[in-house]
Image 1 (cartoon, one colour):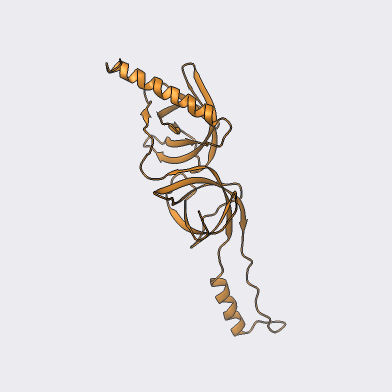
Image 2 (cartoon, helix red, strand yellow):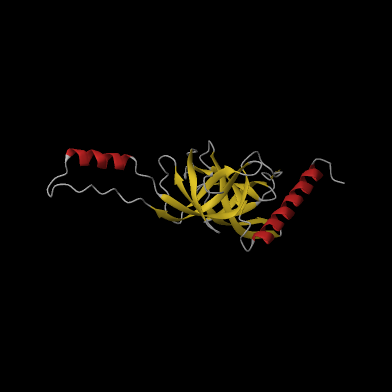
Length: 232
């Protein structure tokens, strides 16, 4: 993500999926600064957001956290008579206001960028495997599938895309704890929400978390093969 690169941001709600374009105006070792091309989303400092950009070979996505919002100063009216502004000055002020640039938003990228194209990692369905997870304050949630980098779960609470949440996953004697980001969400007819979650690889628990998910995934695959007579 270099100066001049386009960054697309997703509407920070569960139900709406709109993208708005911004342009990188500055880069630092651990952050980027962007300005929206048109009306910006109502971001807040500390908010986690989902951003999309062109990688070397494919379209990528990454979670970011808003560090600072630097808003433009409102234009000051040109000097005029002590008690009034003449028509020319008023017109000039209006023109300046119409051309006023939006805020510069500094963002700290979180974790590693991943492909936003079709799924890159094979997922194993776990609907009948009895795997349970805790997501935030919700517990006893059913895990729908597992991959090498995360899992999908059904929940009742609404979480924002890009939000980072603590999770626990348990299956038999295996249990793990880690941080995940909300990568996708879909509301079902039942009113529940299906979330796609991805592990935050820079989290201190990430290695153990992903290793345990991998072991659970292999155990589920072995059980599925045994039920279908494919085990060796």
